[in-house]
Length: 109
Length: 113
Image (cartoon, rainbow over all chains, first blue to last red; front, side, top):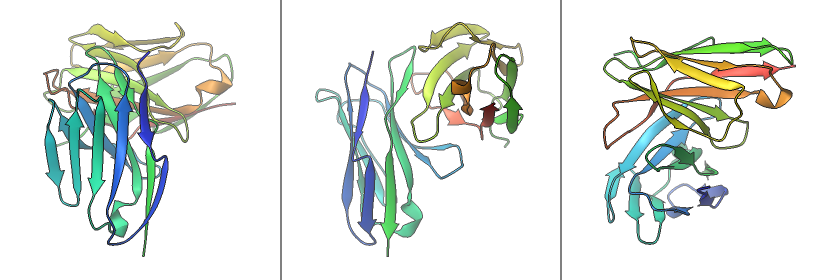
């Protein structure tokens, strides 16, 4: 069974700082997704990464994919409080979707 | 445009009962997927349907079943409920392309007593 591991699981960072969340997965896949979930809410799609070397950026978030290393990263630049949420990566194998364990991010003043 | 809608919002059942959850996809989306999210964990894939056919199945017992209707809406049925079935059940819809970007509904919170 495919495993999708994220680290860290919990992240507390100060406003204005940079940090990276890592997503490792255990089988070949060319499709990786990042989602955001606020407490008590559903999931919001952030990025879709479809090929090796793909890089997407939206505001203070940038996601990348290295299919050879089976690794995706979500980089946060100059964090602000509004980014506090849980972030999930997900891998699509073609007939199943596997979500990571999630990274709970808290941005503190 | 309306997003993915799910009903009911909340549901309380007792062990052994069955439950039916409903989902309407975004207009134009022909694929619907179901997920179970236990508190503090990531969503677990249950099923994906496209054009009324099951296209993917996760590691869930046969107590879980689903179907998709001609209008692309979907139902998830769970029989013989267990306490461990208490979770947020999420429905997601997509275009069924190589992109396969999933758009999630608000979820149904199921509590089994």
